[in-house]
Length: 326
Length: 291
Image 1 (cartoon, rainbow over the protein chains, first blue to last red):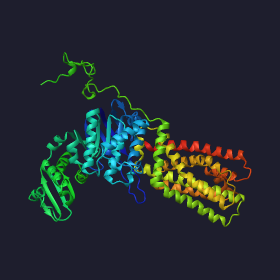
Image 2: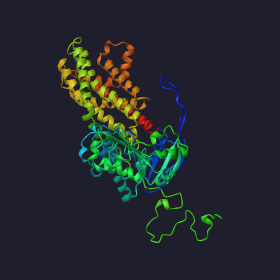
Image 3: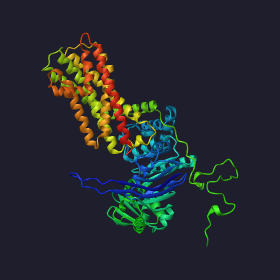
Image 4: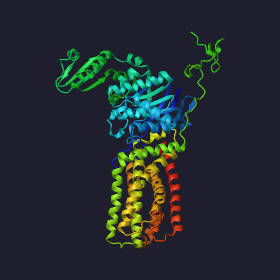
């Protein structure tokens, strides 16, 4: 489906200018091999600067690799980068091109530019807006939406027009749980109905565990591990760190919250809990759904033990923070 | 323990050899085939030039409601302000008055099509927004022409208002103002192409903004000030600027008996420059989209 062999990309060294120090050449892809099968949800995980976006840009024909081979559905995308746009749908990190359009027009225009005629484009637009629950926002410009809503609108634009491969660069950044769920349901539906393959970049380990079939962990342009989430998890101690920040006093009158109190290390409004993943997910469900959510200011889920795997695999410890974002 | 390659085992299908299916009709999924060479999947259709152009144009035009209307007011008031200022030093009805009104009107086009479009493409390129278009099967010309056409369209109301107000202010005949119907699209296309090319070629976003501003300043100084009072060197620069020919065409139309041949010649130059600058912008887009 999607095969990558010996991919190398080096960004040249930049000369120092006034105010900007010189940077040495960076090998952003350093001999990457990947095999993604049809119908798979395949994740690229890694800290900031690990080379995830560089890899994705080479897979989508936006960046020409120095060496190596990229084949998608039997097409050589190094030799024919222009074919990428006819094989895959891409969601980049930036929304500037769509920012001033309304949600509906962003989806419709993108569908038109994917080669659909007016009628088909409008039908796809309506379907995807319905599917992602964007109906109430359809007439508003992306610029006026919150970060998560804007991201969701960009996902809508990426999903219109059938493509056998979807390449999504951090699709759920900033989204609330409802929006996240809508995105994963939409992705799942395309996979079940049409065998769509999804390649996705993520920072979020928890999300990676729940939605991905396989994960490649990248560091400094190399794949340092590639396995199912369970396989990777087996390398890690199975505790999850949950941090809850309450707006004021913790709502101890709610039984679910009171039950967590004993396990928590409280420091002012902040509670820290170390729980098995299932219990952590249950705890998050308790505090983000129902009456406790009103009292909740913020929460963080992190698997500190993945850092250990990371170190064991030779990853950089100082930048591991980037791997474990909420 | 011995490892025997599959090909060496009797009865095993060779890699790449057709595999018998029990049902016959159901193809094996591509990933299950042992051979790495699978038949290339069919490519989805590309967007054709005109529908894609129309879609980009419509999308860009809709941006006006959100982002461009305040700027359009600025452009119009700037031009009207310049004319009011010049009213103090230029007599009404004369050739100088014609250049001032024509130059101020075309200045609106320069402000929007050159300056704002250069900024827009500069910003799009710097932020990575071009990736959106670059990963869609759309002809580069459709993106550039659609955006340029939309920006040229934004200028219509401002240019028309400026020309009418100027004609009233300087007592010029309005009978031939319909020439604007040719002046705006042609000088708009020429300046928008230039603006898009500047925005896409500038190595940094700030530079794109700067170039756009400089282009507009040039259009202001060289277009509004009467040509016969300029030093020789400056008048050469004036001849190089595409907006000059739009200004000339409009200025000629204020005559009682306009020299239509000269008007057509000026518009022809505009059209020629438009073709060249839009081609350059398309080339610049291709270059910027795949790095």
